Length: 325
Ligand code: NAD
Image 1 (cartoon, rainbow, N blue to C red):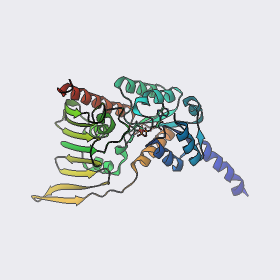
Image 2 (cartoon, protein in one colour; image 1 turned 90 degrees about the vertical axis):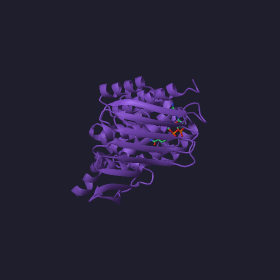
Image 3 (cartoon, rainbow, N blue to C red; image 1 turned 120 degrees about the vertical axis):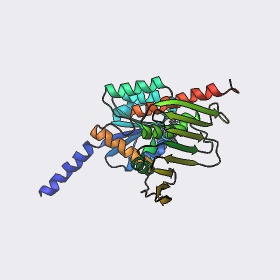
C-alpha cells in the first residue's frame, strides 16, 4: 500500500511549497489579479485587502479566501503580494510589504517620483526580495514576436488611446498610459536617451490627458509616442522600422503585419502570434521569479527607468506649455 500512504505526503509537500499570494487593492484591475491567482499553478491565493470593506468582503467570499484587516495582518499571511492600489499609494503600500520581507509585484508606474522608486529598488535589493513592475505589454505575445524580429530599431511609433476612464487620473496620461510604451521602447532600443521633446494638455483632469513625445537615442533611433485618455476609441499600436523590416503590430487584438524587401519588391505577411492573456503570463512570471529567486523580466530598476523618462517628458511638457505657464 506504499502508493496510498505516500499520497498525503505528496499533497502536503506541494501545499507547503506553494507560494501564498495576496492582492491589495481589489478595484478595476485588482479583481483580475485575484481571478488569475485563484487559478494559477504554483501559488495559492491567501487573501485580499482593500480600504473599502465591502469590496474586500465581496471578493473574499467569492474566492473563499481571507479578507485581511490591515497591511500588517496581510504581510503575516502571505509570501508575496500584488499591489494594485492607485499610483499615489504605490510607494507607501509596496514599501510596507518590502519592509515586512515580502516579495512585491507593483502595478505600473512603479511610484509617482524617482526618489520613491529608488527607495523601493534599494529596499528590495538589500533584502534580496523580488520586485516586479506591472509593465504588462512585455508579456503580450505581440512583444515576444517583436523582440525576436527587431534587433536594431531605427524608428518607433506608438499610439495608446483610450476613452476617459474616471480612474487612474491621479497622475498624468504620461505616467498612466505612455509609460507602457516607454518601457517597451527602452527595452528595445538599449541606448542612452539624448533628447526629449514633448507637448501635452489637460482636458478633463488636472494633469495631461493627451500627450506626444519624441525621444532621440544615442544610436540614432527615434521614438514618437502618443497617449490619450480622451479618445472615442481604445487603440494600442506600435510600428517599428529597422534596417531590414517594418512591423505594424496591434497589442489589443494581438495581430499585425511584417513587411520586408526582396528582389526589389516589398513583401507583406501576417505575423504568427499565439494569442494569450498578457496579465496571466505576467503574474505567472512573477510567481516563477519568486519561486526560483530569479531577476524578474520587468525589474524594479526597469520600472524606475521608465518612470525617469516619463517624469522628464512631463517636465518638458510643462516647460513647453506657454498657455498654462
Ligand atoms: P481602482 O481605483 O479601480 O482600484 C483601486 C482599489 O484600491 C480600490 O478598490 C480602492 O478602494 C483600493 N485602495 C486605494 N487605496 C488603498 C490602500 N491604501 N490600501 C488598500 N486598498 C486601497 O484603480 P485601478 O484602475 O484598478 O488601478 C490600480 C493600479 O493599477 C494603478 O496603479 C494603475 O496605474 C494600475 N493599472 C495598470 C494597468 C495595466 O495595464 N497594467 C491597467 C489599469 C490600472
